[in-house]
Length: 410
Image 1: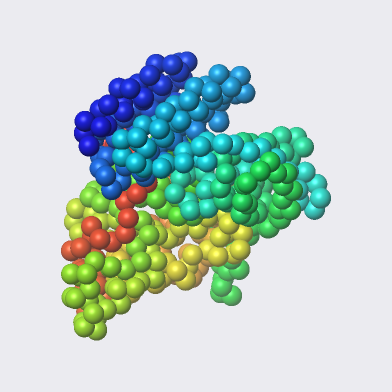
Image 2: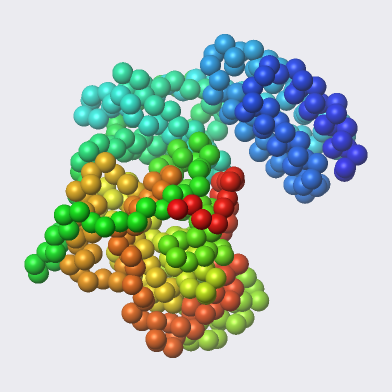
């Protein structure tokens, strides 16, 4: 296999690289393609590696202006044809790559109450969510026009206003040129109704601002398309930063829904205290510190907040699993009264939950979490100890690749 890959890189991939005009992003993707082929390709994953990188290169070429795109497209199609032919001759693999790179025009117009919405974010991603979305912004007529390969896509409409939120999500099957009119809707954003007891008004809350490692541009756009992307991004930022407040983070993982590893299931299945860890309430982000403390983060996106889902009920469920400190994390909105109102609600409710506001470059902590009030319960403690012991199985680590990771950013 190594000899075959070497032949492909020297005869097919390198001539394509040399033929391209200077474009740092496309050339970087070709380098990534070459590296993954050389260091990771095997008979079992070769097809997936080729598909992945052909899609990424095609997506990057489509971001170029019309003149640059036209210069490169013909060279790229020749490269794709050569790739198909090479692997068909050498390994008898039929790749059918032209279906990936053949494009169709997709025109999208965004309306709310039959009025066009300018400066509205339109994100497009494959339906399988295997690739981060590409984001566009509508013009004065509320329109964008893009070219997409054949396939199914999720189109997400998103615009944040001061006291409201414009949103819509739909799936389209692109098989030809199409024109789409999207009837988005506007929802009001408001904090929860406070308890009936006297509200503790916090005029100017104290806060702690934690700078976060810089996300790649695509991930900065992706976090507002699907809440899971935001969880993946933050977990990667925590691992890279290596600190949260005064604690050193040794690992952070996203989307923990229970232990699925067969050896662990044998330990859990017949233990009444631990069997609840086989299938858990989904915990968005968990981090483990060097002093063996578990910190949980329950995320809520703009979409969730627009539905008045603030995360309190979900966050309180973390305590059953032995998580010592739990934070509700809201995506920042352009309305400080909303965040202050929610903080007032937490303070008046006397809940142990912490509260933070997430942005791609920083986390603003408005309220520090208090210790899990159930932590002295023997079952709770055993569940927490088990998660700590097998933390490498407690969720995923897929996410953006970050650079410049250091121990302390503040």
